[in-house]
Amino acid sequence: MCASAQVAVRGDALYRALPGNPGVGSCISCHGEPVNNRNSVLRGATGAALISRTIAAVGAMGYLRQYLTDADLGDIAAYLASVVPAGAIDTLPELSPTTDQFGAQLVGTQSAERVVLLRNRLPRNDVIIGAVLSSDAVQFPLQHDCPLALPPLAQCRIRIAFRPAAVGTVQAGFSVVDSASVLLRSGVLAGQGVENMPAQLAWREPPALAFGNVALGASAERSAQLVNPTAVPVQLQRLRLTGPNASRFVLDANCTAPSLLPAGGTCELRVRFAPSSAGLAEAWIEIEPDAGNAPLARVSASGIAAPDAPPAPPPPTSEGGGGLASLAWLALLGAAVAALSRPIRCRSARRRSS
Image (cartoon, rainbow, N blue to C red; front, side):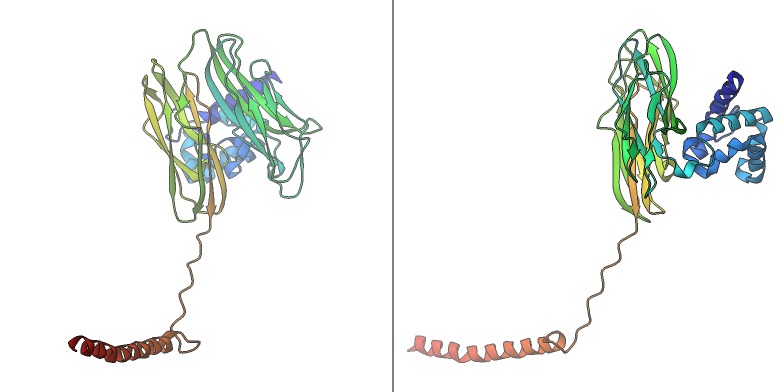
């Protein structure tokens, strides 16, 4: 059991940062969090052989073979098998975000709460929620408002905080299980306990970038400012989009990680959305610094079909008092008014001369 757990932990590390410098840098760059099953990545839980055949069959992935041994592929398969029960992904509720890095926190103090959304994607059936659990309830306490039966297409909120008990890196997980204690979804939490008050990153505005409705074929952009209000520079180790629809957005920033955000400095982030398909898209801006971390910024948008062009006005007609008949009638009326006004002007002129 311990050996299997260690293998899964190593597979998690490989999934997020491949050895060497293969360009893409990680499986997560293409597939995102495995819990979202992008490109059916959870099929890799079947074993190393399937992952190996996939790498050989997909030309863009072929280079990975020089960096990953059979043992590496086995560890990645073990990690994928630990994420969610294979085969049930279409009926499981959606959890977002599935990872949260709290950054540095003074020992014995508690961070602000972070919010995780749990959504029932089924249009007709409830999802039974037995419990929402933290694997380290002392250092990562959580609360939630999820009902025992989450209605169709409804969502509930899980609120998690970080309270380190000692100096050092702290990692834990949280899970959502049904009434029979079967795992529905899981997430990963991390933070750093420190003795001295750390630098603290913050957002200049509330961390939510809402695009609203954007027509297919059009594009929109939103921006946010990440600030370091302290007198200590902050090392940004990771800055990226993650979540169920991260690939539908494009993130650009002038502080691409890894980089230093100087004391009093500001990082300008721009997120672009150009929908090619209709529907709701959500993602999160994930940051990993060596300081206290700003909350994850939620990004949301909806792609909608472009509105139909308004109908052209009807051509002029000679019926119903409109069109050419109306123009002719107005011309005759004008001529009559002009003719009647001439005698009046003449009579007025004779009066003045007399």
